[in-house]
Amino acid sequence: MPQFQYTVMDPSGRESRGTLDSDSLAAAASSLREQGYLIVDLSAGAGDSSSSLLGRITALLNVGTHLPITTRDRVFLLRQLALMLRNGLTIFQALDVSLDQSRKVQMVRVIREMSEWIQSGHSLSSALKQQRRIFSAITISLVESAEASGELDQALSRAAESLERRQELRRQLITSLTYPTVVVLTSIAVATFLVWKVIPKFAAFLSRRGIKLPWSTQLLVDFSGYVARYGTPIALGLLLLVAIVVVTFMTPRGRKVLDAILLKILVVGHLLRVAEMVRFCRTMSILLSSGVTLLESLQITSRMATNRSYRTCFESAATQILEGRDLASSIRHPVIPHAVSHIVAVGEQTGSLSEVLQDLGQFYEKEMQASIKKMAALVEPVMILIIGGMVGFVYFAFFQAVFQLAAGGR
Image (tube, rainbow, N blue to C red):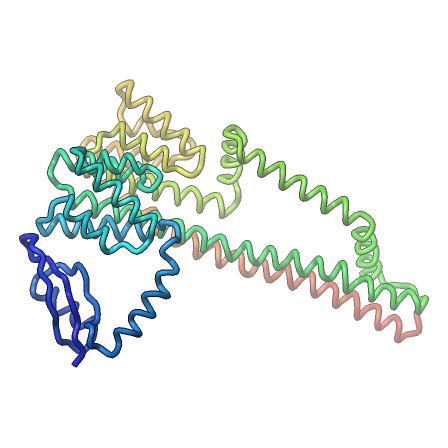
């Protein structure tokens, strides 16, 4: 039976080492967890025939040690710290264990800097602020609020959950917009191929026969000739237009205008609105339930908004909160559905604002999934009709010309 070497911590934080006979690495880990241990390290024993293979696999995996820190890395670290704090370890011990288990160079550097900062007498929230490039404002605020209440492990779990939800929301949006984009690009590619390659050759073949072309074929030939003459200026004009849009998008005022236009696009605009409402409700609910003030929650939420129209709305709401207004009246804005402000007003009156926002977040998350399905169901037949229409018309024009040729040009 294979032998495995382990390093574990008991619930009191004492570290112990030893060996364990087990059928597999997974079975050994399961056995140690059943005994109430926190696994620090677990590997095949020196005498195990699989140790050389494990070493080679580890060497291959080390290729990724210089990759950048991802959302998955942040979630893993936060959940790991929450687990160890829940089992009685100090934050310094938890960071020390996380440091030993980290494989990415950048993550090792971040954890080491945090550990040194805490060791010098600072708090965890202060250490996270020193790593603002890695950790979001919502994570820092949750930890800062929890340090006063003593629920640091719960705050870290909520921060990890928030990151996972944001990542899932981003993935759903990208997935939903990828299919229409691919279909549109395919349509453009098919049309370009027909205009530049197929139609000119067919037109040259028919012109040598000296027959009068049917209206459909003549239309294709004229269009192909127009594109051949003015194709380069048209392409340059399109490139210039794209460049103008990109430059405009990089300026604050231009970004705000383009974001407002995006919200008015059929189907896509509705999807973006719903996604922003999911982000707003989820973020506000997590922050408020963790003891973060309403003003700070709005300020953090405004920084997390991807659309400038919503960012302006939340910034304005934060200013109105400072003036003494309630949240329901502060978020009354054209980009916010009327039902949201009414429901938020009920939550404020009953003292259950965070629960109400959580329910709203779940509602809009279901709405977003339904919108994604609706968009996919709408885009697919429309694109099929467009591509099928283009190809079908070309075939119709070709066959009309062939029949005209077979009839002797009459």
